[in-house]
Amino acid sequence: MIAGLNHANISTVKLQETIDFFVRVLGLRVGPRPGFGFAGAWLYSGDQPVIHLVERASPRTPDGALDHVSFTVANLDAEMRRLDELGIPYRWSDIPDGFGRQAFVQDPNGVTIELTEPGIGTAGRLPGRPA
Image 1 (cartoon, helix red, strand yellow):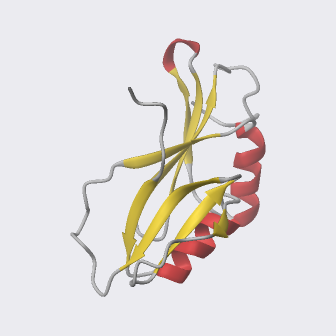
Image 2 (cartoon, rainbow, N blue to C red):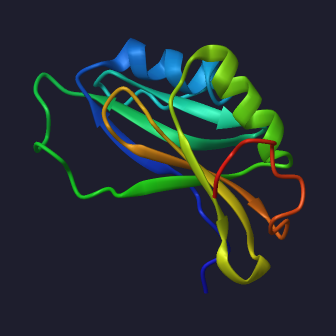
């Protein structure tokens, strides 16, 4: 039985830029990582390493197979304000049937990162933001 998402792994030719994105934009922190013998980083949310980065000399494939990684957030409005302040482009929408709201942003490698606020529906929408 699956208990929850453990981590997403992103291969990158832009290791430091990718670390900076996840730390600066999403608030993760660099934490302990086993000595695998190749460059990379583990990025933590609390005590959980949720993003594993592996540095590569060249891109694995042009687009890769990873579609997106989703993180739960407590306040999507606050996260979108932060993205606005940082000048990070994103798109957002309500999730149908009152399941919440979501915003999508891309990391330096083109990986889509979803920020999900569960169970809010249309309440708390920022003024002037179309669905």
